[in-house]
Amino acid sequence: MMVLRRSNERGQADHGWLRSFHSFSFADYLDPQHMSFGNLRVINEDFIAAGTGFGTHGHRDMEIVTYLVSGELAHKDSMGNGEAGAAHSGVIRPGDVQRMSAGRGVRHSEFNHSGAPTHLLQIWIQPNQIGIEPSYEQKHYEAQSKRGRLCLVASGRGEPGAVTIHADAAMYSGLFDDNESASMALVPTRQAYVHVVRGRLQVNGHVLDGGDALKLSGEIQLDLHHAAQDPEAEVLVFDLA
Image (cartoon, rainbow, N blue to C red; front, side, top):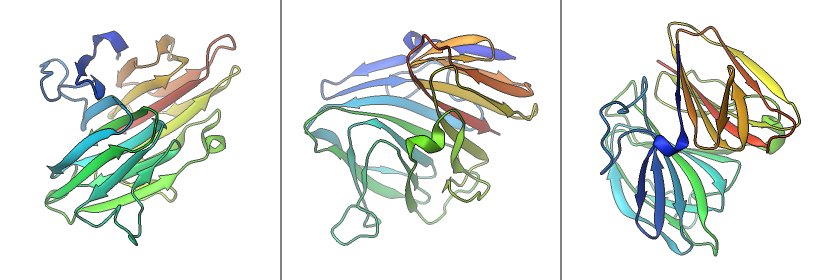
């Protein structure tokens, strides 16, 4: 079964400094039909104005993945990331994937210090362990590693090269242009979620534009195809419990 959801059907919030589009219920956007999909709880597409950001706030028992589309974002947390001399600077840029396991509790802030807006996706995945020690990880993926293919960028199965999430899930990123295509076998007892970040992409026969999503349940294969006349597409694919 496949269910298509268009970008304009998402929840929206405009706080002036922040414009946000919610794929699932979040904050003041409550939609009982879109609470989550499998263990995927949140996909927020955020546009953060220059010189603004999220003040210090807390999370617990959630796997939080941040995917930068454009601009940059400075992260600082109660684990010491973002502080002078820390192992991680906390600044994330396009191509970076940041993972924060909130575990038994963490506080952090996120700020756009640049002179241009920052465009990102913030993703929450429900963990398969609660009360764990909070942790942080950040990796960069060159565009070439995602060109015409799905690159594994986050996984709960310990695959090398991906950031580690404490959840029964995996996240792939891909870039497609000039008739490029890719396929991925699906396990029919699991679920898959495809989110087009930008551009246009054909997904299992459906044409998706930026912000559109396709939910797949009971399917055995995912097929992605870019038509030559369409703008370059960037896509995220989730394999979910």
